[in-house]
Length: 312
Image (cartoon, rainbow, N blue to C red; front, side):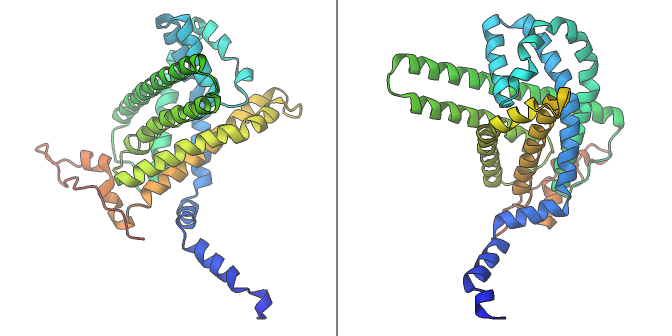
């Protein structure tokens, strides 16, 4: 082959890409059919979203003040950029009492199914099967995990409200600090998303990845979600408002947003999974170590230390 058809820099670039961490992550995800996993997460998340929102609105309308409800409404609208107005969150809180009972009946089966599907997809990235359990016991545990996720969300919401309040207080009393206030708002949003990802990537799938890989994956995911909000807000608004979709414009935009978040979540999960060698991943399965007990109540296989990160 002539030299101009294969310049040295092209071969060097191809070799660098093939040896990069990102390419190995893509291969890891592609071999596990991550688009199918993202589709499963998207569908179950979409189905479970409205009962969870309805129940949260019903509880919040009874326990929180009007000001706190406005804070929660603003926080929820920030999580779905560009289409929050079409979702009409204010009407959701206004009629929370009417839909609260229906949401309560639906949130347990749909929420537990969502947790089960999300856990299964994340464990598939780790090449781990679900531990054999009784169906009723597993669904009960899924409801508990859903409650734990709700508790983490409440803590994150509290951090966000306090942080935003401090930033607004500083902005009202100081002049010329607009850019710093905006940067601080993004930092608070990243911290809140970091807390949520820490729960979703470790506690929900029941794995014990290395600490450094976990922190890196959560930080990448938190920054990535905030960047998606900045870059795709206008696009999602355009999708939701297109006449070609008619009344389905908002659901289509919402499904698109959830799918992007699901793929980013799988990427972060793959970051933690590939930090452990394939042969050591079963040792990082906290669910299997907790379930593998003998007749006397002891553990047949001790959990052992956290698997070390593989050398590059």
